[in-house]
Image (cartoon, rainbow, N blue to C red):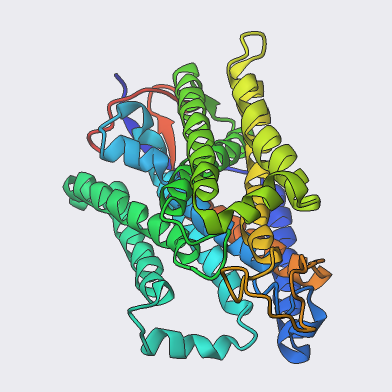
Length: 406
């Protein structure tokens, strides 16, 4: 087997700078939207006293979930010693740190008062999952930076497997913490169940694999890199396995909610009578995000490239809709302030399904966060040697023994 060396992203300077400035433009739009919402207040958004987590939170949570998931390739190569993925591991870690930073940036800028982050970083309530996530998110960034160092520096390469195993454990705990943000909210019928933690883990595995492939496909197009059939076949198998796992835990989540008496009304709402939320769940999250990709990935008539690209795009679209259903749909269902059917009424949205129409400023902030992740990736691969290249065949990525570099 040939040895692998890593190289920088080789691209026409005009293409690089055009993409850099385009992404930078969207970042500026995101910052401007955040600044405007901070000056004017959240009344300029679609959020209100009932829907307190809006579109920026969908982007932020999704990016954090993806950040955990894109580390799949590096975890498989280091933890499970899958040599096929070793050349692709450094890029996997770079994507993870990029999406994590972008997701956290959106959360900070959506606080209304970003300076309040100092309070969150210096005052801790360890009964709150949010306090724990401060350590999980910041710690994951440090762990990823150390992991990248061990993969790319020959002098410390012997610690790569240890750091890969450590990063794998950290990412599982991190995604568990993200799911627990919702699972620990006992006041909302949509949440308050421990099954949300493993559901978020399998969602991260699925979404991360899809995003990793799409970015690798774009890079291979401009970098003129060949992705071997072995890698494509393995990514198809991984995606199929994660799709079935996602479908299983999604069904388990709703079955668990139907078994819990106080959650039954919410299940009826989200599965049959919720209007746009019901449509989003069945058409977006289930059919577009899971069922059609399963059919495509098991098709024998289409090429692997076409199948993976189309299914990954649909999974990514389904992931956004899934977050919409979980975050917005969960808040839209009216709170049960007085359980056990106590008849107490007021003029303040009693038993009313809350409406939410996101503003252009929320969308701008979310897109700006995605642009931040992509620009970090672009700058990273253009200035550091994250991309593999064969010594004997500089334009191929294949199954290789990379013991000298990873």
